Image (tube, rainbow, N blue to C red):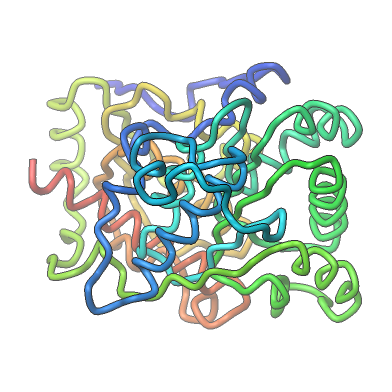
Length: 341
């Protein structure tokens, strides 16, 4: 029996659609500052809420941006600060929740995208056109900020410089402090001037705490047999079933900016024959796919090896360690969603 497959999809996005799509993922539609529940054992979390709310108030020029903000700040204009706000912390502490809440609290034109989506926008529109369009916005929110290669370093530092000089506020989340970006990935020392110039534009806010996705929750369910996987895929309307190796090969020919469109409308993803990624390129594509699945709350079932085995020990101790751990965290949460249903 044939099943719908991700590899049979041909997602496409026009430049205009790329700009229009620069909004928080659907799972963050309803988040606001007052829906973020700080861990009482981690005071930095409550402080991060206050810092983000103050940043939104500063962007709006007053205590605007919703009744909650007005209640905190009244009509008094917030104190002046830098054009950028940088949320630094481990995975699963709610940084994306705070970033999306900031986006919702900001009045006027604004954009929200992952680091990959922002660099893809530049690739689609060109640098000058991207600057022109985003300079008309009050806020650019960048989730999962990271500098993985020299080209990205130069591109993003220049983009942030142009936008902040034009009056655009930039907020970002990352697992790495801004002046440490790129460490362990490429010759970051050769780009210290650019990295430090960019980091000087941000106020850094630390968000500490354990990964909420695994706080008191069981581990991911074990992989199932191929037969059980196919049976459940058939019983789940709107789901897909793909061979893991075939999907990895397909992703190599699809730009990461299209991974979200690839899984739009899918209710569950089933992967047959999962095993550790054979190399770093495949591993990073799987990270990007995991992020888009998590953005859309699309649960996952697998056969073969467990999702925690996606990345080798060598990968988990290398320069992309935090990305891989975030992907495992997110995929584990998604696999639990189906097991509990």
